[in-house]
Length: 382
Length: 161
Ligand code: SF4
Ligand code: SF4
Image 1 (cartoon, each protein chain N blue to C red):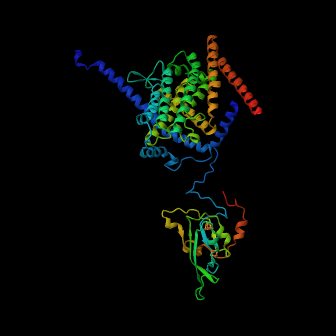
Image 2 (image 1 turned 135 degrees about the horizontal axis):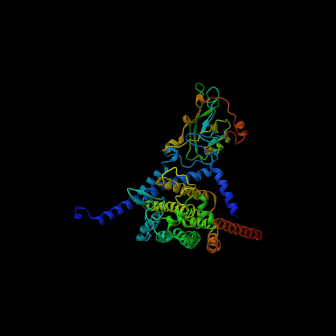
Image 3 (image 1 turned 60 degrees about the vertical axis):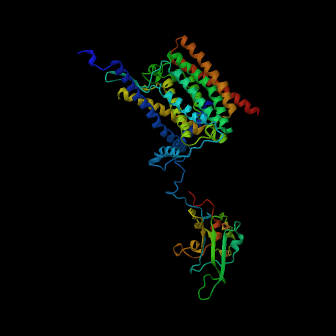
Protein backbone atom coordinates (compact mmCIF):
# COMPACT_ATOMS: atom_id res chain seq x y z
CA UNK A 1 0.00 0.00 0.00
CA UNK A 2 1.40 3.40 -0.84
CA UNK A 3 2.54 5.41 2.09
CA UNK A 4 0.64 8.54 1.12
CA UNK A 5 -2.63 6.88 2.09
CA UNK A 6 -1.59 6.97 5.72
CA UNK A 7 -2.18 10.05 7.79
CA UNK A 8 0.64 12.30 8.82
CA UNK A 9 2.61 10.25 11.37
CA UNK A 10 4.36 13.16 13.00
CA UNK A 11 1.08 14.85 13.67
CA UNK A 12 -0.35 11.62 15.09
CA UNK A 13 2.54 11.17 17.48
CA UNK A 14 2.16 14.72 18.61
CA UNK A 15 -1.55 14.27 19.03
CA UNK A 16 -0.99 11.12 21.06
CA UNK A 17 1.52 12.86 23.28
CA UNK A 18 -0.84 15.76 23.69
CA UNK A 19 -3.74 13.46 24.58
CA UNK A 20 -1.77 11.48 27.16
CA UNK A 21 -0.51 14.67 28.76
CA UNK A 22 -3.98 16.17 28.79
CA UNK A 23 -5.40 13.11 30.52
CA UNK A 24 -2.61 13.11 33.08
CA UNK A 25 -2.97 16.83 33.75
CA UNK A 26 -6.73 16.50 34.09
CA UNK A 27 -6.24 13.63 36.53
CA UNK A 28 -3.68 15.38 38.71
CA UNK A 29 -5.47 18.72 38.81
CA UNK A 30 -8.78 16.97 39.33
CA UNK A 31 -7.47 14.91 42.23
CA UNK A 32 -5.75 17.91 43.81
CA UNK A 33 -8.74 20.23 43.45
CA UNK A 34 -11.16 17.49 44.44
CA UNK A 35 -9.17 16.48 47.49
CA UNK A 36 -8.52 20.04 48.62
CA UNK A 37 -12.00 20.73 50.12
CA UNK A 38 -11.82 17.43 51.94
CA UNK A 39 -8.41 18.27 53.34
CA UNK A 40 -9.95 21.49 54.65
CA UNK A 41 -12.86 19.56 56.12
CA UNK A 42 -10.55 16.94 57.58
CA UNK A 43 -8.48 19.68 59.15
CA UNK A 44 -11.52 21.27 60.75
CA UNK A 45 -12.79 17.92 61.95
CA UNK A 46 -9.46 16.86 63.37
CA UNK A 47 -8.90 20.18 65.10
CA UNK A 48 -12.37 19.73 66.56
CA UNK A 49 -11.60 16.25 67.81
CA UNK A 50 -8.34 17.44 69.33
CA UNK A 51 -10.36 20.04 71.22
CA UNK A 52 -12.89 17.34 72.26
CA UNK A 53 -15.67 18.78 70.12
CA UNK A 54 -17.22 17.22 67.01
CA UNK A 55 -16.24 19.83 64.41
CA UNK A 56 -18.52 20.69 61.48
CA UNK A 57 -21.39 18.17 61.52
CA UNK A 58 -24.47 20.02 60.31
CA UNK A 59 -24.31 20.00 56.51
CA UNK A 60 -24.77 16.54 55.09
CA UNK A 61 -23.82 13.29 56.83
CA UNK A 62 -20.97 13.94 59.29
CA UNK A 63 -20.70 17.43 57.82
CA UNK A 64 -19.31 16.02 54.59
CA UNK A 65 -20.99 18.68 52.47
CA UNK A 66 -19.58 21.48 54.60
CA UNK A 67 -16.64 21.98 52.26
CA UNK A 68 -18.91 22.33 49.23
CA UNK A 69 -21.11 24.80 51.04
CA UNK A 70 -18.02 26.77 52.03
CA UNK A 71 -17.01 26.94 48.39
CA UNK A 72 -20.45 28.13 47.31
CA UNK A 73 -20.42 30.73 50.05
CA UNK A 74 -17.07 32.09 48.90
CA UNK A 75 -18.27 32.13 45.33
CA UNK A 76 -21.31 34.26 46.05
CA UNK A 77 -19.68 36.66 48.45
CA UNK A 78 -19.38 40.30 47.56
CA UNK A 79 -16.20 41.19 45.75
CA UNK A 80 -14.60 44.17 47.42
CA UNK A 81 -11.63 46.00 45.97
CA UNK A 82 -10.30 48.62 48.37
CA UNK A 83 -10.30 52.15 46.96
CA UNK A 84 -6.69 52.75 47.84
CA UNK A 85 -5.47 49.44 46.46
CA UNK A 86 -3.08 49.22 43.54
CA UNK A 87 -5.66 47.63 41.28
CA UNK A 88 -3.66 45.73 38.62
CA UNK A 89 -1.32 44.25 41.22
CA UNK A 90 -4.18 43.60 43.60
CA UNK A 91 -5.92 41.54 40.94
CA UNK A 92 -2.73 39.82 39.83
CA UNK A 93 -1.60 38.60 43.25
CA UNK A 94 -4.03 35.70 43.78
CA UNK A 95 -3.11 34.28 40.39
CA UNK A 96 0.56 34.60 41.21
CA UNK A 97 -0.01 32.49 44.30
CA UNK A 98 -2.21 29.84 42.73
CA UNK A 99 -0.23 29.20 39.57
CA UNK A 100 3.04 28.11 41.25
CA UNK A 101 1.05 25.93 43.64
CA UNK A 102 -0.40 24.02 40.71
CA UNK A 103 2.81 24.02 38.68
CA UNK A 104 4.64 22.01 41.31
CA UNK A 105 2.03 19.26 41.01
CA UNK A 106 3.36 18.54 37.54
CA UNK A 107 6.60 16.93 38.67
CA UNK A 108 5.26 14.68 41.39
CA UNK A 109 5.48 11.00 40.48
CA UNK A 110 2.49 9.26 42.03
CA UNK A 111 2.88 5.83 40.51
CA UNK A 112 5.19 3.52 38.58
CA UNK A 113 5.55 3.25 34.83
CA UNK A 114 2.70 1.23 33.39
CA UNK A 115 2.01 -0.34 30.01
CA UNK A 116 -1.19 0.82 28.42
CA UNK A 117 -2.00 -0.17 24.84
CA UNK A 118 1.63 -0.98 24.14
CA UNK A 119 2.95 2.30 25.46
CA UNK A 120 5.03 3.01 28.55
CA UNK A 121 3.26 5.66 30.54
CA UNK A 122 4.83 7.28 33.57
CA UNK A 123 2.36 8.05 36.31
CA UNK A 124 3.25 11.71 36.66
CA UNK A 125 2.48 14.70 34.49
CA UNK A 126 6.08 15.05 33.50
CA UNK A 127 9.41 13.61 34.59
CA UNK A 128 11.98 16.34 34.74
CA UNK A 129 15.54 15.24 35.23
CA UNK A 130 15.92 18.34 37.41
CA UNK A 131 12.63 17.75 39.22
CA UNK A 132 13.72 18.82 42.66
CA UNK A 133 15.32 22.00 41.33
CA UNK A 134 12.10 22.78 39.49
CA UNK A 135 10.26 22.37 42.77
CA UNK A 136 12.52 24.88 44.53
CA UNK A 137 12.35 27.32 41.64
CA UNK A 138 8.58 27.31 41.42
CA UNK A 139 7.97 27.15 45.16
CA UNK A 140 9.98 30.32 45.65
CA UNK A 141 7.82 32.08 43.06
CA UNK A 142 4.89 31.77 45.44
CA UNK A 143 6.38 34.41 47.69
CA UNK A 144 5.95 37.03 44.96
CA UNK A 145 2.22 36.61 45.02
CA UNK A 146 2.13 37.02 48.78
CA UNK A 147 4.37 40.08 48.79
CA UNK A 148 2.43 41.72 45.95
CA UNK A 149 -0.85 40.93 47.68
CA UNK A 150 0.35 42.55 50.87
CA UNK A 151 1.79 45.57 49.12
CA UNK A 152 -1.08 46.30 46.76
CA UNK A 153 -3.79 46.02 49.43
CA UNK A 154 -2.53 49.27 50.96
CA UNK A 155 -3.20 47.99 54.44
CA UNK A 156 -0.62 47.95 57.19
CA UNK A 157 -1.56 44.49 58.40
CA UNK A 158 -1.30 43.09 54.91
CA UNK A 159 2.04 44.76 54.44
CA UNK A 160 3.35 43.41 57.75
CA UNK A 161 2.18 39.94 56.78
CA UNK A 162 3.86 40.22 53.40
CA UNK A 163 7.11 41.44 54.95
CA UNK A 164 7.16 38.62 57.43
CA UNK A 165 6.33 36.18 54.71
CA UNK A 166 9.14 37.30 52.43
CA UNK A 167 11.69 37.26 55.24
CA UNK A 168 10.51 33.87 56.43
CA UNK A 169 10.37 32.24 53.03
CA UNK A 170 13.78 33.55 52.02
CA UNK A 171 15.33 32.27 55.24
CA UNK A 172 13.75 28.87 55.16
CA UNK A 173 14.14 28.29 51.45
CA UNK A 174 17.89 28.11 51.96
CA UNK A 175 17.48 25.53 54.69
CA UNK A 176 14.94 23.65 52.61
CA UNK A 177 17.34 23.46 49.70
CA UNK A 178 20.31 22.49 51.84
CA UNK A 179 18.54 19.85 53.89
CA UNK A 180 17.59 17.95 50.76
CA UNK A 181 21.19 17.75 49.54
CA UNK A 182 21.75 14.70 51.75
CA UNK A 183 19.19 12.75 49.77
CA UNK A 184 20.61 14.01 46.51
CA UNK A 185 24.09 12.83 47.54
CA UNK A 186 22.73 9.38 48.25
CA UNK A 187 20.53 9.22 45.17
CA UNK A 188 22.95 10.84 42.76
CA UNK A 189 20.11 12.39 40.78
CA UNK A 190 17.65 15.27 40.77
CA UNK A 191 14.96 13.17 39.16
CA UNK A 192 12.12 12.54 41.60
CA UNK A 193 11.04 9.35 39.81
CA UNK A 194 14.51 7.84 40.07
CA UNK A 195 14.75 8.90 43.71
CA UNK A 196 11.47 7.15 44.47
CA UNK A 197 12.47 4.04 42.54
CA UNK A 198 15.72 3.77 44.49
CA UNK A 199 13.68 3.39 47.67
CA UNK A 200 11.64 0.46 46.38
CA UNK A 201 11.75 -3.00 47.94
CA UNK A 202 10.73 -2.35 51.53
CA UNK A 203 10.50 0.43 54.03
CA UNK A 204 14.06 -0.06 55.27
CA UNK A 205 15.22 1.33 51.92
CA UNK A 206 13.48 4.64 52.55
CA UNK A 207 15.75 7.64 52.77
CA UNK A 208 14.22 8.70 56.07
CA UNK A 209 16.32 6.00 57.74
CA UNK A 210 19.51 7.15 56.10
CA UNK A 211 18.67 10.81 56.50
CA UNK A 212 16.85 11.24 59.82
CA UNK A 213 18.42 14.64 60.38
CA UNK A 214 17.69 15.77 56.85
CA UNK A 215 14.10 14.60 57.20
CA UNK A 216 13.49 16.58 60.38
CA UNK A 217 15.08 19.69 58.91
CA UNK A 218 13.22 19.37 55.63
CA UNK A 219 9.94 18.98 57.48
CA UNK A 220 10.62 22.03 59.65
CA UNK A 221 11.60 24.15 56.65
CA UNK A 222 8.65 22.76 54.73
CA UNK A 223 6.25 23.92 57.42
CA UNK A 224 7.78 27.37 57.17
CA UNK A 225 7.54 27.32 53.37
CA UNK A 226 3.86 26.49 53.43
CA UNK A 227 3.15 29.12 56.11
CA UNK A 228 1.69 26.51 58.41
CA UNK A 229 1.67 26.59 62.15
CA UNK A 230 3.93 26.88 64.06
CA UNK A 231 5.34 29.18 61.35
CA UNK A 232 2.17 30.90 60.17
CA UNK A 233 3.36 34.40 60.96
CA UNK A 234 2.38 35.84 57.57
CA UNK A 235 -1.29 35.22 58.40
CA UNK A 236 -1.16 35.29 62.21
CA UNK A 237 -4.87 35.92 62.74
CA UNK A 238 -4.37 36.99 66.31
CA UNK A 239 -1.90 39.71 65.38
CA UNK A 240 -2.55 40.70 61.78
CA UNK A 241 -6.27 39.97 61.26
CA UNK A 242 -5.40 37.60 58.46
CA UNK A 243 -2.08 38.99 57.27
CA UNK A 244 -1.45 39.38 53.58
CA UNK A 245 -4.97 38.39 52.54
CA UNK A 246 -6.80 40.68 54.98
CA UNK A 247 -8.20 42.83 52.16
CA UNK A 248 -9.21 39.98 49.91
CA UNK A 249 -12.73 38.65 49.70
CA UNK A 250 -14.80 36.22 47.69
CA UNK A 251 -12.99 34.06 45.12
CA UNK A 252 -9.79 36.07 45.37
CA UNK A 253 -9.55 35.00 48.98
CA UNK A 254 -10.49 31.49 47.94
CA UNK A 255 -7.47 31.49 45.62
CA UNK A 256 -5.14 32.09 48.55
CA UNK A 257 -6.99 29.46 50.50
CA UNK A 258 -6.78 26.90 47.69
CA UNK A 259 -3.10 27.56 47.13
CA UNK A 260 -2.35 27.13 50.82
CA UNK A 261 -3.90 23.69 50.85
CA UNK A 262 -2.48 22.69 47.49
CA UNK A 263 0.90 23.71 48.90
CA UNK A 264 0.35 21.47 51.89
CA UNK A 265 -0.46 18.58 49.59
CA UNK A 266 2.51 19.16 47.34
CA UNK A 267 4.83 19.57 50.30
CA UNK A 268 3.55 16.28 51.71
CA UNK A 269 3.96 14.69 48.30
CA UNK A 270 7.54 15.94 47.98
CA UNK A 271 8.42 14.71 51.47
CA UNK A 272 6.83 11.37 50.60
CA UNK A 273 8.84 11.10 47.41
CA UNK A 274 12.13 12.15 48.93
CA UNK A 275 12.05 10.42 52.29
CA UNK A 276 9.18 7.94 52.46
CA UNK A 277 9.68 5.97 49.29
CA UNK A 278 7.17 7.71 47.06
CA UNK A 279 4.62 5.30 45.64
CA UNK A 280 6.58 2.17 46.58
CA UNK A 281 5.04 -0.23 49.07
CA UNK A 282 6.55 -0.51 52.57
CA UNK A 283 6.64 -4.27 52.09
CA UNK A 284 6.54 -5.95 48.70
CA UNK A 285 3.23 -7.77 48.46
CA UNK A 286 2.11 -7.98 44.84
CA UNK A 287 -1.53 -8.19 45.92
CA UNK A 288 -2.63 -5.33 43.74
CA UNK A 289 -1.57 -4.43 40.20
CA UNK A 290 1.16 -1.79 40.29
CA UNK A 291 -0.95 0.88 38.58
CA UNK A 292 -3.39 0.68 41.47
CA UNK A 293 -1.08 -0.06 44.40
CA UNK A 294 1.30 2.80 43.51
CA UNK A 295 -1.17 5.68 43.72
CA UNK A 296 -2.85 4.08 46.74
CA UNK A 297 0.37 3.85 48.74
CA UNK A 298 1.29 7.32 47.62
CA UNK A 299 -2.06 8.68 48.72
CA UNK A 300 -1.84 6.89 52.05
CA UNK A 301 1.59 8.34 52.79
CA UNK A 302 0.53 11.83 51.77
CA UNK A 303 -2.52 11.45 53.98
CA UNK A 304 -0.39 10.51 56.99
CA UNK A 305 1.78 13.57 56.43
CA UNK A 306 -1.25 15.85 56.11
CA UNK A 307 -2.52 14.33 59.34
CA UNK A 308 0.80 15.22 60.89
CA UNK A 309 0.56 18.78 59.56
CA UNK A 310 -2.84 19.19 61.18
CA UNK A 311 -1.85 17.49 64.42
CA UNK A 312 1.01 19.96 64.75
CA UNK A 313 -1.35 22.84 64.02
CA UNK A 314 -3.55 21.60 66.83
CA UNK A 315 -0.65 21.24 69.26
CA UNK A 316 2.08 23.79 68.99
CA UNK A 317 1.71 27.53 69.44
CA UNK A 318 2.96 30.05 66.93
CA UNK A 319 6.59 31.11 67.22
CA UNK A 320 7.51 34.66 67.99
CA UNK A 321 9.11 36.49 65.06
CA UNK A 322 12.61 36.62 66.55
CA UNK A 323 12.33 32.97 67.57
CA UNK A 324 11.39 32.12 64.02
CA UNK A 325 14.43 33.88 62.60
CA UNK A 326 16.74 32.49 65.27
CA UNK A 327 15.46 28.98 64.65
CA UNK A 328 15.89 29.32 60.92
CA UNK A 329 19.35 30.87 60.84
CA UNK A 330 20.96 29.52 63.99
CA UNK A 331 19.61 25.98 64.14
CA UNK A 332 18.14 24.74 60.88
CA UNK A 333 20.67 26.27 58.51
CA UNK A 334 23.87 25.15 60.35
CA UNK A 335 22.39 21.72 60.89
CA UNK A 336 21.53 21.43 57.22
CA UNK A 337 25.14 22.27 56.39
CA UNK A 338 26.35 19.77 58.97
CA UNK A 339 24.07 17.17 57.44
CA UNK A 340 25.63 17.74 54.02
CA UNK A 341 29.16 17.34 55.37
CA UNK A 342 28.22 14.27 57.40
CA UNK A 343 26.46 12.62 54.48
CA UNK A 344 29.24 13.48 52.08
CA UNK A 345 31.85 11.92 54.39
CA UNK A 346 29.79 8.80 54.90
CA UNK A 347 29.11 8.46 51.18
CA UNK A 348 32.82 8.84 50.51
CA UNK A 349 33.54 6.12 53.07
CA UNK A 350 30.94 3.85 51.43
CA UNK A 351 29.21 3.26 54.77
CA UNK A 352 26.26 0.89 55.18
CA UNK A 353 22.82 2.46 55.74
CA UNK A 354 22.73 1.96 59.51
CA UNK A 355 25.82 4.12 59.92
CA UNK A 356 23.97 6.97 58.21
CA UNK A 357 20.99 6.37 60.46
CA UNK A 358 22.99 6.27 63.69
CA UNK A 359 25.06 9.32 62.74
CA UNK A 360 21.96 11.33 61.95
CA UNK A 361 20.20 10.31 65.13
CA UNK A 362 23.33 11.06 67.16
CA UNK A 363 23.50 14.59 65.76
CA UNK A 364 19.81 15.13 66.52
CA UNK A 365 20.32 13.87 70.07
CA UNK A 366 23.39 15.98 70.77
CA UNK A 367 21.86 19.16 69.36
CA UNK A 368 18.70 18.50 71.30
CA UNK A 369 20.66 18.15 74.56
CA UNK A 370 22.63 21.32 73.86
CA UNK A 371 19.53 23.36 73.05
CA UNK A 372 17.76 22.04 76.13
CA UNK A 373 20.69 22.93 78.37
CA UNK A 374 21.03 26.40 76.86
CA UNK A 375 17.34 27.02 77.33
CA UNK A 376 17.48 25.85 80.95
CA UNK A 377 20.40 28.14 81.72
CA UNK A 378 18.69 31.14 80.12
CA UNK A 379 15.54 30.36 82.05
CA UNK A 380 17.51 30.14 85.26
CA UNK A 381 19.29 33.42 84.54
CA UNK A 382 16.03 35.20 83.85
CA UNK B 1 13.42 19.54 73.81
CA UNK B 2 12.39 17.45 70.85
CA UNK B 3 11.03 14.94 73.33
CA UNK B 4 8.83 17.59 74.90
CA UNK B 5 7.47 18.53 71.48
CA UNK B 6 6.66 14.90 70.82
CA UNK B 7 5.01 14.57 74.22
CA UNK B 8 2.78 17.49 73.29
CA UNK B 9 1.85 15.78 70.05
CA UNK B 10 1.02 12.61 71.95
CA UNK B 11 -1.33 14.53 74.24
CA UNK B 12 -3.29 16.02 71.36
CA UNK B 13 -3.28 12.67 69.57
CA UNK B 14 -4.89 11.01 72.58
CA UNK B 15 -7.52 13.74 72.69
CA UNK B 16 -8.68 12.85 69.19
CA UNK B 17 -10.28 9.68 70.55
CA UNK B 18 -11.87 11.20 73.63
CA UNK B 19 -15.65 11.54 73.77
CA UNK B 20 -16.79 15.02 72.83
CA UNK B 21 -18.13 17.33 75.49
CA UNK B 22 -20.20 19.37 73.05
CA UNK B 23 -23.95 19.56 73.66
CA UNK B 24 -25.48 19.17 70.19
CA UNK B 25 -27.95 21.92 70.86
CA UNK B 26 -31.16 21.62 68.89
CA UNK B 27 -31.20 17.84 69.37
CA UNK B 28 -29.77 17.68 72.87
CA UNK B 29 -30.80 20.22 75.43
CA UNK B 30 -28.86 21.04 78.49
CA UNK B 31 -30.58 20.51 81.81
CA UNK B 32 -30.49 23.88 83.46
CA UNK B 33 -29.58 24.73 86.99
CA UNK B 34 -32.65 25.43 89.15
CA UNK B 35 -31.52 28.99 89.67
CA UNK B 36 -31.20 29.64 85.93
CA UNK B 37 -32.51 33.09 85.06
CA UNK B 38 -34.50 32.81 81.85
CA UNK B 39 -37.89 34.08 80.74
CA UNK B 40 -40.07 35.47 83.53
CA UNK B 41 -43.05 33.68 85.04
CA UNK B 42 -45.92 35.14 87.08
CA UNK B 43 -46.92 32.68 89.78
CA UNK B 44 -50.40 31.91 91.09
CA UNK B 45 -51.87 30.49 94.25
CA UNK B 46 -53.26 26.99 94.38
CA UNK B 47 -56.76 28.29 93.71
CA UNK B 48 -55.63 30.03 90.55
CA UNK B 49 -55.51 33.57 91.93
CA UNK B 50 -52.57 35.69 90.85
CA UNK B 51 -49.94 36.39 93.43
CA UNK B 52 -49.05 39.79 92.00
CA UNK B 53 -50.65 42.63 93.94
CA UNK B 54 -49.59 45.38 91.59
CA UNK B 55 -47.22 47.07 94.02
CA UNK B 56 -44.71 47.97 91.31
CA UNK B 57 -41.74 47.19 93.55
CA UNK B 58 -40.32 45.06 90.74
CA UNK B 59 -40.61 47.94 88.30
CA UNK B 60 -38.71 50.27 90.61
CA UNK B 61 -36.09 47.64 91.35
CA UNK B 62 -35.46 46.93 87.71
CA UNK B 63 -32.15 48.53 86.70
CA UNK B 64 -33.03 48.62 83.02
CA UNK B 65 -36.61 49.80 83.38
CA UNK B 66 -37.93 46.83 81.52
CA UNK B 67 -41.11 46.45 83.53
CA UNK B 68 -44.23 48.47 82.97
CA UNK B 69 -47.41 47.84 84.97
CA UNK B 70 -50.72 49.46 85.66
CA UNK B 71 -52.52 48.38 88.82
CA UNK B 72 -56.29 48.15 89.29
CA UNK B 73 -58.57 47.65 92.31
CA UNK B 74 -59.90 44.16 92.95
CA UNK B 75 -63.67 43.86 93.04
CA UNK B 76 -65.18 41.52 95.64
CA UNK B 77 -67.12 39.66 92.92
CA UNK B 78 -64.09 38.87 90.79
CA UNK B 79 -60.96 39.00 92.89
CA UNK B 80 -57.93 38.53 90.62
CA UNK B 81 -55.50 38.49 93.51
CA UNK B 82 -55.99 38.09 97.26
CA UNK B 83 -54.71 41.60 97.92
CA UNK B 84 -56.37 44.94 97.49
CA UNK B 85 -55.09 45.51 94.00
CA UNK B 86 -53.80 43.50 91.06
CA UNK B 87 -51.79 44.25 87.96
CA UNK B 88 -54.17 45.03 85.15
CA UNK B 89 -51.40 45.51 82.65
CA UNK B 90 -48.04 43.90 83.23
CA UNK B 91 -45.39 44.07 80.51
CA UNK B 92 -41.75 43.14 80.44
CA UNK B 93 -39.64 44.21 77.50
CA UNK B 94 -37.17 41.34 77.05
CA UNK B 95 -35.03 43.48 74.78
CA UNK B 96 -34.32 45.77 77.73
CA UNK B 97 -34.17 43.04 80.37
CA UNK B 98 -30.72 41.95 81.44
CA UNK B 99 -31.98 38.93 83.41
CA UNK B 100 -30.46 40.20 86.61
CA UNK B 101 -33.23 38.81 88.78
CA UNK B 102 -33.69 41.97 90.83
CA UNK B 103 -37.43 41.93 90.13
CA UNK B 104 -37.61 38.48 91.64
CA UNK B 105 -35.74 39.66 94.71
CA UNK B 106 -37.84 42.78 95.11
CA UNK B 107 -41.22 41.07 94.86
CA UNK B 108 -42.87 40.73 98.30
CA UNK B 109 -45.34 38.14 97.04
CA UNK B 110 -42.96 35.80 95.16
CA UNK B 111 -45.09 36.58 92.15
CA UNK B 112 -42.47 37.32 89.50
CA UNK B 113 -39.75 34.70 89.11
CA UNK B 114 -37.29 33.98 86.37
CA UNK B 115 -37.95 30.60 84.79
CA UNK B 116 -35.75 28.12 82.95
CA UNK B 117 -36.79 29.00 79.41
CA UNK B 118 -34.00 30.47 77.32
CA UNK B 119 -35.16 29.96 73.73
CA UNK B 120 -36.25 33.54 73.24
CA UNK B 121 -35.46 34.24 69.61
CA UNK B 122 -37.93 36.26 67.57
CA UNK B 123 -38.14 38.04 64.27
CA UNK B 124 -39.98 41.24 65.26
CA UNK B 125 -39.40 43.66 68.09
CA UNK B 126 -43.01 43.45 69.22
CA UNK B 127 -42.56 39.78 69.98
CA UNK B 128 -40.21 40.61 72.79
CA UNK B 129 -42.68 42.67 74.81
CA UNK B 130 -44.35 40.09 77.03
CA UNK B 131 -47.79 40.62 78.45
CA UNK B 132 -49.43 38.94 81.40
CA UNK B 133 -50.78 36.12 79.23
CA UNK B 134 -47.23 35.25 78.16
CA UNK B 135 -45.94 35.02 81.69
CA UNK B 136 -48.75 33.73 83.90
CA UNK B 137 -48.21 30.07 84.69
CA UNK B 138 -50.64 27.79 82.92
CA UNK B 139 -52.79 25.34 84.88
CA UNK B 140 -50.81 22.37 83.53
CA UNK B 141 -47.59 23.80 84.93
CA UNK B 142 -49.14 23.59 88.38
CA UNK B 143 -50.24 26.36 90.71
CA UNK B 144 -49.37 26.59 94.35
CA UNK B 145 -46.68 27.65 96.70
CA UNK B 146 -43.43 28.79 95.19
CA UNK B 147 -40.54 29.02 97.59
CA UNK B 148 -37.97 31.36 96.12
CA UNK B 149 -35.62 30.91 99.05
CA UNK B 150 -35.55 27.13 98.68
CA UNK B 151 -34.65 27.39 95.01
CA UNK B 152 -31.86 29.81 95.79
CA UNK B 153 -30.45 27.51 98.46
CA UNK B 154 -29.73 24.83 95.83
CA UNK B 155 -26.14 24.51 94.70
CA UNK B 156 -25.63 26.38 91.46
CA UNK B 157 -24.25 23.45 89.54
CA UNK B 158 -27.00 20.97 90.36
CA UNK B 159 -28.68 19.64 87.27
CA UNK B 160 -25.84 20.54 84.95
CA UNK B 161 -24.56 17.78 82.66
S1 SF4 C 1 -34.52 40.50 85.45
FE1 SF4 C 1 -33.64 42.49 86.00
S2 SF4 C 1 -33.71 43.60 84.09
FE2 SF4 C 1 -35.09 41.91 83.83
S3 SF4 C 1 -37.06 42.65 84.38
FE3 SF4 C 1 -36.20 41.75 86.21
S4 SF4 C 1 -35.18 43.42 87.26
FE4 SF4 C 1 -35.58 44.12 85.17
S1 SF4 D 1 -44.70 41.24 90.54
FE1 SF4 D 1 -44.40 41.44 92.74
S2 SF4 D 1 -43.25 43.34 92.95
FE2 SF4 D 1 -44.13 43.37 90.92
S3 SF4 D 1 -46.04 44.42 91.12
FE3 SF4 D 1 -46.53 42.29 91.34
S4 SF4 D 1 -46.39 41.89 93.55
FE4 SF4 D 1 -45.41 43.87 93.19
